[in-house]
Length: 202
Image (cartoon, rainbow, N blue to C red; front, side, top):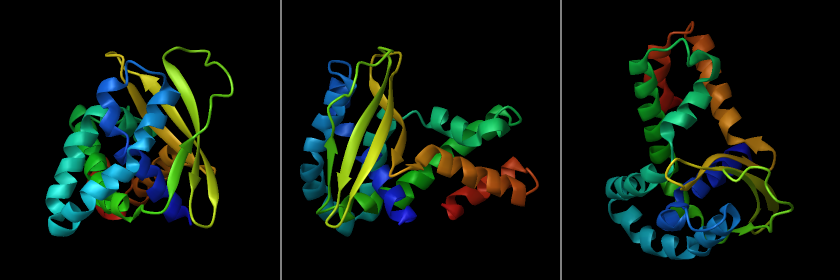
């Protein structure tokens, strides 16, 4: 169940890219809602490519995914207290490993997401910050409805970006941080070894 919810969470990242160019013109809620309206079309256009050429599929997802996700910021949050202890080279290496692990592990999730849908709920109240937003969602499957929340922010260019997702109480950011901390403990806080092992561990 936990793996399913994590996969669904990452799917949300994979399906956010079509409206990137419009993100600075609409609210966070409207942005998320419009993205989800395009999910069915994405599934229909990507299914064949995934079957015929998985590597090309992953490359296309990467090219579309990268502009709207700050992998360095997310990787920094995953590293947590270990970030300050790392070198700039190690930070860059982990951010790249983190990005690769997400794309490789979850590229197929988009294709498997057929009968489910994501509904963006109306905002409950006005956000205290114009640059940050919490967007409530419901992930509806054939058997259950899972509540979720996007943590979103406006970057320096005025583009809305998701920086974390919580689905049915599972915090994606904290899940990956716990995984990183566990690897650090097992490898006696050798960051280089953790980076080498990260992709295989996801």
